[in-house]
Length: 150
Length: 150
Image (cartoon, rainbow over all chains, first blue to last red):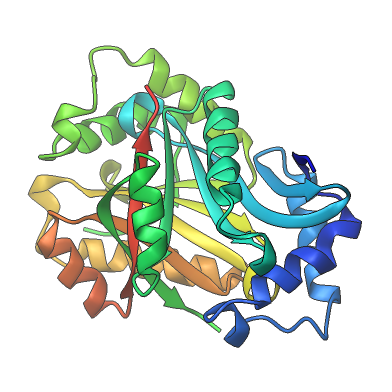
């Protein structure tokens, strides 16, 4: 059984959305009954060279995902930042180190693209996730603020 | 005296970098003596339709800045997020409400572009900034993690 990390294709979208929804926070925010908005969003991500949607493919089945965005900015000497969003491992594929390999893959890809840092935010209630990122070398130096518009 | 919020142009870069460096955290991270990396980064930002570098222009002088990035994603029903980074108000232009107007401008622009939420992170040591964002309606629901690669 091998796991391959690869760029997502459109036919992966239902499996990705199912993982986004199978989550205490995601369950209240996702609506897998209406897939059209997700397919439209996929097209926007896929067309943008600064966005990279990744899946963990285990023998043809999608068992994990994350999104990387490469952000240009003036600060830190004109550094490129990689931002990780929407990390999920399918519930039956957890506890075997897949999440760790997925994040390490993202870090390696960010380094390969010349990024100076990798950043992400995690909901304050996801205490297990905080330990997970700290073990991978991340420092929780920031507070993450959100303002919902709609 | 009027303040105009507008897209940054290349000749604004030195004034923006001076503001990034004039800051307890930025002072250790910026090197205004070598501007070439900043000009290159400006070109990348300016060429990317998903990035918008803004300055507050007061009678022809740059007195504030922030960067907006528009992120496509599958989560939250395929929502577009606006992310604010690198917020600065020139030290002699503070306490007059300019920062508030700058963030409100960014929120309005994000709404105009169909974003579902606006997000940002703020270093844990910037306690005044936390109060500022909370007054503007932001909720500090997340922890922000960073991993420096270089």
